[in-house]
Image 1 (spheres, one colour):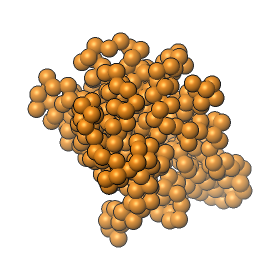
Image 2: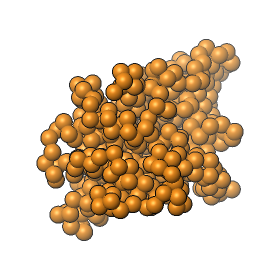
Image 3: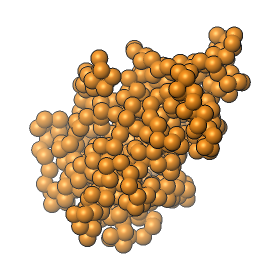
Image 4: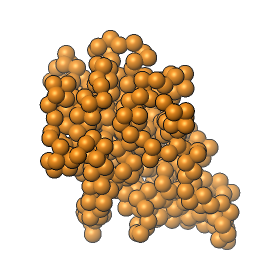
Length: 421
């Protein structure tokens, strides 16, 4: 592989596969608020959080970790101000103490914070404005959950970086299935071993937590009641259980994909379960996860991190490709696995982060596994039918177009329903 392309792929993995605790949207709010508190230099008297609709949608139904079971934009922002450490980025509220939870509850009951929908902004937009006497501070995050785009102090702009530099985060426009497969085959694992091993460690831990204890609707545990001897059931259960815990306030960190912990878990756990079942060596597992993560990122680059399109679908399809890789699949089997998966469940709606995400993950993984079982027998949905058109890459682009543009009005209606408009 060309060295420039190789280095770009390594950079993408290092920039995307980062740790985060809890649902990424409330954590991003807490991060933004913590940074604003740092800029203000004192405890605010009033707080205003302005968010895009997708941020509000993804925070409304999910428990903020280390909050004592509380939910909502205001809780995430107040907790970030009270106890957040902005230098920890998406683990910003990992060091909360009981007195911080108590103070957050008090400030919330006093109405210190308000949330406003910011229309006309991109899907990932957060602005936190703090006031203390005559002093003000404002911080904006956009594009990525940990990307600070703007900082103001007393009405004066002191920092601005609206875009993410490609040289820092990698150029995802260069992703394609054939090169991703070649990279997975050829990558020097020492270049990615640390990030992949961390992904396995963190995401396996929260999956085990979800399978062991009673979190949310217990989707993962429910699957195991069907019979744990079937690797397909165990793969679905392991992925769903991580989401069970994460969506319901578990503070264990996960390694994310496409800005999402749920997608990170979905990319990881089915491949890990199948690797254990097959008995492959560690290096092969790592290469399969390199493929899975990049294929998920490849699909989501057309859709965007936040939309009305459930990202678990992309991650589930990619995980099935990772499973195929473990079994020695070639380019065509991997491509057919993708189109079989996307031609089945492409279009599951995202109506916010919450307990039911675990069930959507299990459905996406199930569709992916079925897609692979078809593909390895040279069974696939014909090109030219529906969104499956022309070739594998064109199909991914079609799904992306539908998720990014076609489902915009769906996104608006989902938000209107959720906020009672």
